[in-house]
Amino acid sequence: MKRVMELYETESKRVGSVDPDPKATQKRLESIARQLKKEEIEWLERQSMDPLSDADARFFAVYLMGLSAQESAVASLTRIATQPIHPSKNARKNSEERSLRASAVEGMSRSCKEFPGAVKDGLLEVISGQTDEFLRDRAHRGLYACQTGKQIEEQDKEALRKVRKKK
Image (cartoon, rainbow, N blue to C red; front, side, top):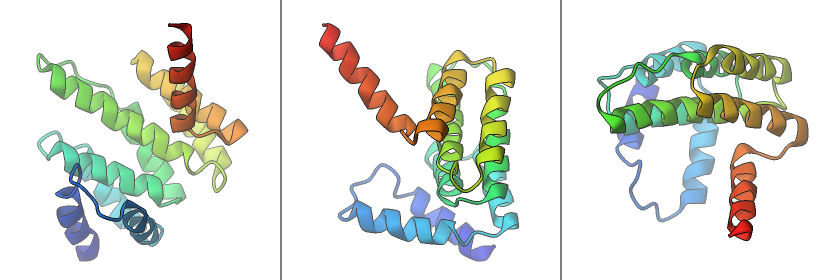
């Protein structure tokens, strides 16, 4: 557990900074994420849902779980994505909460090949239980990614190209 706590502490501070070799960082984090133990994933889930924690740290926790390709991470990401967003007068805070849950949906959809049933069930849970339209849309895109292999990010780029063509 100490290993993940230290990783969380150091890596979350690097979020948003310039990375001289992002591909190497991605590979390193994927390797670490795939070795996460269930209790470490549960700890990351708790950190990601702590509204008093730094937003970058919370996003890093969700990101790491999304890289893990583990069924317990899919369950954690489902719980995160289905949490209601409590309205705040702080628009930035509302946006962060939506983005955090969207990141959880995207992380779930990355594990379609490994755990198709758990991922589809989780995405359907988001669609049926989440009141936020944006997050339901992300879950629909996640299901589409599971069916076609076209990741959510690719779908977003394609939709943006279509909008730009219309102008």
